[in-house]
Length: 291
Image (tube, rainbow, N blue to C red):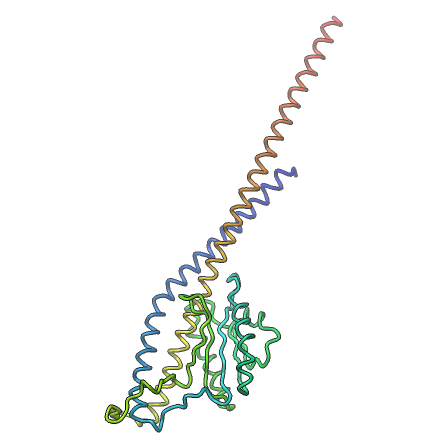
């Protein structure tokens, strides 16, 4: 195989890879658009639940959760299950390495990692309590949440208290640390005196408090996972576009090299034809002289 054919074969392989990368980029774009429909709804639900909690715990201060995170808090890091998302997992692992000293200085803690790719980047991190495979697309969130909730409840039953989730925030392109348990209630927002009128309930206040905490936890986890998936797919789109730009540049370079080699081949073919014609002419002239 000539060098030009090898280059053309290599260029064709790169073009096929480029088509696959374009498909991956388009899939990431579709995922971002799907997630955008739910993120806003989840955020509105969280705000409504926080307002409800403020009114309820203002009327029932005896059931109010403590403001501190707990003696042994749980930290949840939301990474990715798939790759090709630039430094998505590396930056999250780096964030925790910088944060872990401050967390460990306050006492014991539990750490849950979500995402196989994050687990690969988190080698050497101290005290990893659980590692769970995470969702790759929005449709997998519903199946993933029961496994995550089971892991959280298992740690709570073992004595852990409080939950803080760390995840990528897509709009600000930064890592956010958000406390979900206990429900964040600012003392300045709680109603006082006559304003704290107990709401009318069909169940006991304690049962309502437990259900409210569970609902808030589910809503907070939904919103954090949606945000993490949206940020992951945005990173993937940027990563794919950068790779495609480099790929297009390389294909253009190979096309130029192939064209130059083809020109050299044509020149060589013309030279061979001219030499052959000259040799044939000399042979013909020699034959005529012999006659």
